[in-house]
Length: 202
Image (cartoon, rainbow, N blue to C red; front, top):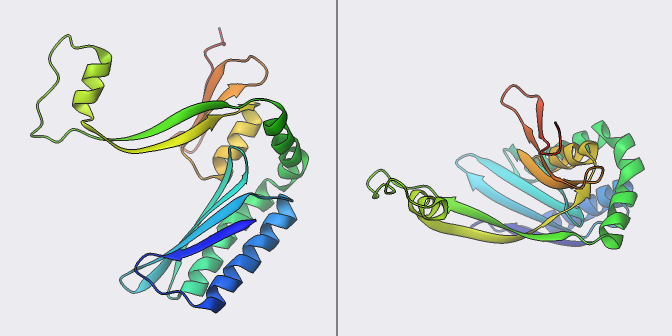
């Protein structure tokens, strides 16, 4: 697994880099077999350190953990423990589905997509004209595309989509339902429950 360890305006020791790489490689081998890559970023805010881990365990499968502490090693331990807790919670499902999901991603074509982040209109910006087309209204209300990243839409069951959403600590996941063939969305509601949008349902 390719592991990148970096610091935002922060010098990292060789021993910390080695410790991070060794521990993440152990976690990946234990739960996923052959993870693709991991990016670990350290930063410092006032009197504490933060650590953000993004591990790509397969095409479309991302695992995320965050931590903070008084020193960089403890911040990494906190982030790694968040990952471990999610993996222990879903260990049975991971063991049953992880290899099948990885194999399925290789056998079945994934659908390419594009992920955009838009800057919301400032208060002093001109409002959209009444009757404007949807695309023009969006461009006016969200004046600038500030990030553009490639993405994929994977064929999953609802259970698998929820698992991926929780493992990646994401608020929403779009997928193609492997049962109906339709685009579906699962998302985390404000009350803590899971929402599921299925256009194929009556």
